Length: 145
Picture 1 (cartoon, rainbow, N blue to C red):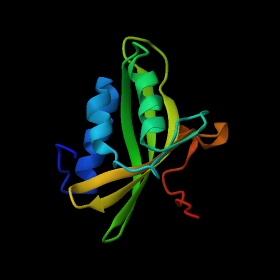
Picture 2: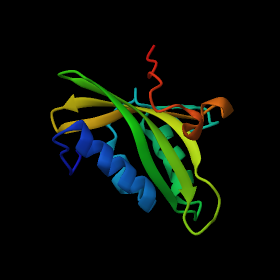
Picture 3: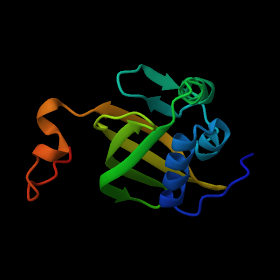
Picture 4: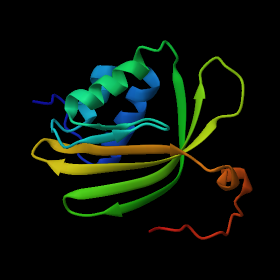
């Protein structure tokens, strides 16, 4: 049973990114649903299915010794009564290292449970070179498929 109740998908998302930046595995897994159908894909990584596989993937990131800084932008939200989808861009850098942040597109899916909102999918991949945020015109439409 989870200790934390997230009253909204936004609360769960805030806790997710806070845990990621703090390399806090327990806080990270508190956001995820206790379910064998949860799915996580890290940029360039394989598809992780099930609670144990997802936990192992985040454990590898948390134990790397690198602390990540993640800024979010371009959030698009599709809300339903039981499921909410967040599509956004992540700008990831390693704390204490120079260089431009890596741009990543991410989809986070949250499901309403008896104990608040929980993440059920996190899928992230690097932006193609031609679609870097600095190269997009401000008035360009967002394309959803």
